[in-house]
Image (cartoon, rainbow, N blue to C red; front, side):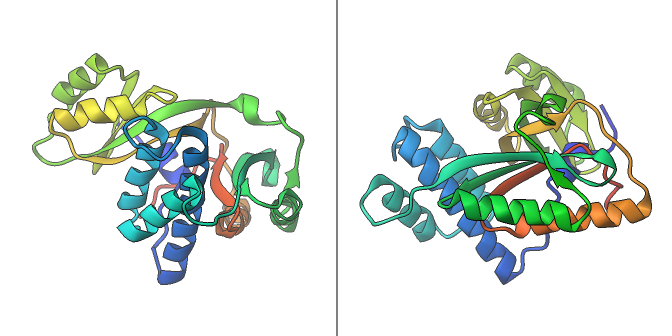
Length: 244
């Protein structure tokens, strides 16, 4: 169960300066807009909305900002219609990269994403060129303390539908089928565990290693992609070094 968390590093948490926090709130606001359009504004009947609200609160998004985003999406306030768009391509040394976006202007977004790939030695590919290398899984991260009994946690998680449990230094990662993370998180919360994050992610089947200089270039490309307002998530199959 123990080991280095590749998934954790795929979406490495950046320090949240005011500017970064604003970008995060913008991205979450777009997610809220889309899930409300798809399933309505009632969290009791729209589990995707409940997930995004939980994500918003984990990132300290103010309640009034959350409510305003919901009202815009439900038509109570004027808002923008966003569409999902996914781009696939290659980073340095043939590494696989998937970029999930929400946009109101596909031409702008495609141009921005292509520029980030081109600038750092990558190339944008066609749909399906790398997605076959990934699987979508439900991931629940739990806080790990001195009192955490891993064997007991594993039994509880497996009974609740988990497929695997991975232990790391300060947290535990529980893996389940795609879109089953909410049910699993609820069961673990009821069992007394503190949930850090629960979401569906794309997880690569295998990882590739990059040399130190290639890693620098690759990280710059990922940073540029993640800084784009239209980009929601960036997934890749590069084995990231341990974070200090």
